[in-house]
Structures are given as structure tokens and as C-alpha cells.
Length: 329
Image (cartoon, rainbow, N blue to C red; front, side, top):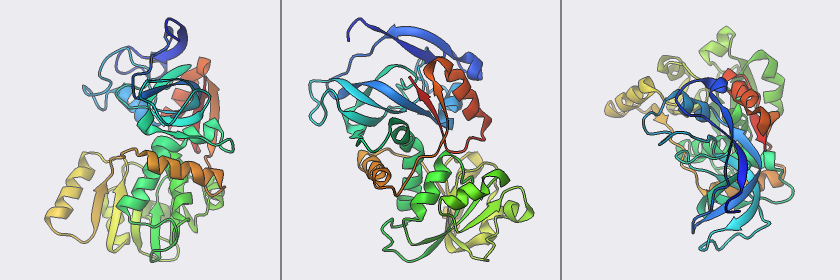
């Protein structure tokens, strides 16, 4: 592929939102020793993608401009590095690209073999691409932070999932129900039936007094909260938690970090746990297999061609997508 050009979408500076995206022709990347080159079939957007553009992680990310964003991709292997052992050309895969390199809004991208897993024919590219940041975050929050066993072998736990119709939330509901859990979920009124269809036992409209207070309709105290929403103070969670309840915050801000530190310093049994998702191929493979077996599904809000990536970007920024926003090169 050396010397060939591809269509890509990039931005040249912080800020600008969807209007800051530019369509360009750039060289097709060359895989290093431990990388595979993918012809992309689907890329999914996550809030972190446009937040990086806004400058939330400046000056660390992006490391340089121009930057081709997005990390969650699925496609076909078209070239392998000299050290790659597990994949060959023609393989269908799903891969996580590092935030430092990005590359997902393009026709081709290079991915580390270590963060690439096989995609069976039963799982579409769009379904697989959605699993990465969102699915892995939900999986890590439930299994590692909350201690939920997804084979139903653990003690029953009461779990609250906020913003349950969103990218992380809709996976968290489904995965939680693979364990021995009672799930209460929050979402907007228009999505209540949808969230119930994912398996939630109780659903709260977050705009009602009960939803704002996060009180379980059945009066249960929560052993774990998978917190996918924003701007909910600790004082709202605390009275609803069981004796050793945890709030796992997937997008912790300064206040959350301070509350977390304070709870540890005071030896509180109730904890706020900031989550930093660490992608692992083993967990991604587990999620792909759950989709193949029909135990987990990626709900797709909308699909957009690469030529209209700005529409997908704006949709994600709007914050009301139900499930995942997909770009198809």
C-alpha cells in the first residue's frame, strides 16, 4: 500500500466542533513490526473523541496536529507487520487504536496486534466497533470495580446505572443482567421502554423528582452505581447506597476525584471510585463472543458515511444518542 492515498477526516487545532473537521487525502499508513493494517468497515464515535478536540486533555492529547480522531474500529486485515503471528490478510477483526495516534476516521488504519481480536461472521463491523471504549468501560466497571460476576455465581447485588440508554449505559444494563443482579436504570422518558427491553428491572425518568433523587421504586439500596451521566453530586448518591455501596464514575471530574480521596481518608465504607478504562484484548474477545451468542447487542443510534463525518460528530456532541453513532468509510 506504500505510496497510495486515502480519504481521512482530521482537525488542525483545538476547538471548532464539527465545523473544525477537514476532509483530506493522506498516505495510507504502513504497519510496524507488531501492527496490522486494516481496511476499515466501521468506526464508532465516543464522547472522549470530541472532548480531546475541545482540549480537555491538552497538552497531552493529541500529541500533535493535524490529528485524525477516533479509536474504535472494525475492518479487514490487508497487511501485517513482520512480527505479527495471530492474523493474516483477509481476517475480519475489531481493534482499539490508541488515543495518542487515533486514526479511525479514515479508509485505512494501523492497529496493534495486542489490541486486535478476531470478529466472527455472525458479528457485523458496526456491532463490533461499538464494543470498544463503551463496552470495555461497562465491563471493567461491573467486573473489576463493582465485583459483579457475569456468570451469576456471585451474591445478588442491587445495581443502579445512570444514563442507561447511552453508549456505555446500554452495554452496562445488558452485562449486569448476565450476573445475579437487580438493575435500576435512569434515562429520558422517550427511552424508558427501550431500557426495559435491555433487561432493566426498574427504570426512572431522570427528569422526575424520583429520578432526580435516584431512589429505587422498590426501595432497594444500591450496592454499586455505574455512573454514566454528569453533574450528579455525591450527596444525591450517598443516602441511596447500601452500607458498603460504591459509585463507579466513568467520567470523573475534579469534584469526583476530591470526593474519592476524602472517602478514603475518612475510611468511609461507602466509596466513590473513579474509573480509568484500560483496554484488554481478553475482555474485548469476551464481549465479541457475547454478541455472537446473542447475549449482548450493540444498539446503533445512526450510521453516517465518512463523507458526512461532521454529522456523526455533531450527533455525538449533542449528547442524546441512543446507543452508538457509527461512521462507515
